[in-house]
Amino acid sequence: MAFEGLADRLQNTIQKIRGKGKVNEADVKEMMRDVKLALLEADVNFKVVREFVKKVSERAVGQEVLKSLTPGQQVVKVVKEELTDLMGGEQSKIAVSNRPPTVIMMVGLQGAGKTTTTGKLANLLRKNYNRSPLLVAADIYRPAAIKQLETLGKQLSMPVFSLGDQVSPVEIAKQAIAKAKEDHNDYVLIDTAGRLHVDEALMDELKQIKELSNPDEIFLVVDAMTGQDAVNVAESFNEQLGLTGVVLTKLDGDTRGGAALSIRSVTNTPIKFVGLGEKMDALEPFHPERMASRILGMGDVLTLIEKAQANVDEEKAKELQQKIRTANFTFDDFLDQLGQVRKMGPLEDILKMMPGANKIKGLNNLQIDEKQITHVEAIIQSMTKEEKIHPELINASRRKRIAKGSGTSVPEVNRLLKQFEDMKKMMKQMTGMSPKGAKGKKKGGFKFPFNPF
Image (cartoon, rainbow, N blue to C red; front, side):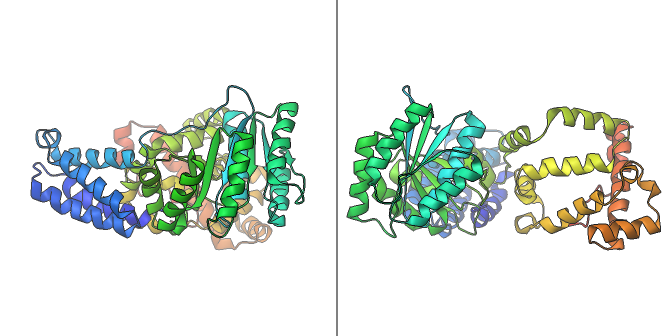
């Protein structure tokens, strides 16, 4: 996550004050000095930092903290609320036109990931909101952009409207909207041209497209890794076009994340979506409160639940529960579970959404090797149907055959078999006794095969 450095600093700072029975002005002053440094280092705009520190300080030495039973926790609550407010308070939802199609103009500089984000947003609209979008190739200056959008359209099985690179973008937008009405597409996503920097020619063309298409949303796609520059770009585009939202890309990259904390305050434009990876489903609605929670190490349970609901088969989950109760859990069940969890996204990101995950040593630097998980899948897939149900049948010669078939080694096969056996024993213990007894008897717990943690 982009906020790793900032999250570490803020969590360490608020940890000092969290458990305090009494909090005085000097405590708050010291904490706010650390918070200020952490925010500035994360490339948050100086004016934004100054305003944030002022608001938190005023509330943290006020009656709501000093008269509360747990002042330290109350200060943390104040920091979280102000951080949420800084990023926009509540989630800003995407517009829906009363007279379809809803038109969205995608704008931004070259290299911010505008075309890819257009595809990701179309995918999200279909998957999460049951919409049928039309993608519009209106970037005629970069021939690769038209081809790229058409490729994305094929990949997603979505229509792409293109008139090549010899027709003006204004005309393309006009005909695309007419086509969407004809074909009953309820969203039109116009992928416009970008430049290496903001210039007059670019803005004039975008203003013409805006005038003709009368968009319901104008989304600026901006690269979070450009830090303070992202805020300056957002300011320029907002002044000229009147943005309705920002989509931050590469928020999963090795960046200080200050852009996400500054854009809303500086431009008064909400962050609507964030890009968290390369895949077509790696775009999420931006929830300020959930992001504040993640930054402060409080986890993000709601996003975790949403991911699980979207990717985990409920019937299979109930079936699995029954199998665990009767200690009837097989390698096929394990493989199925592994597949469902992988659909939710990178495992290290899922772990970080759990409350208290920030206290797990080394979790921030955790990199789970996908190859190791692929090895596990390959080993299980190299077993016969009978072996998956009855792993006790797997003798030395069978282990050699499985290792050869999966392209792994016999020690790796042995390790997986042992850990699977340990896991089954642990499940039996946990289902066969009271929680108190299970807690007392459990030793070490199950580690993921080949211990990538």
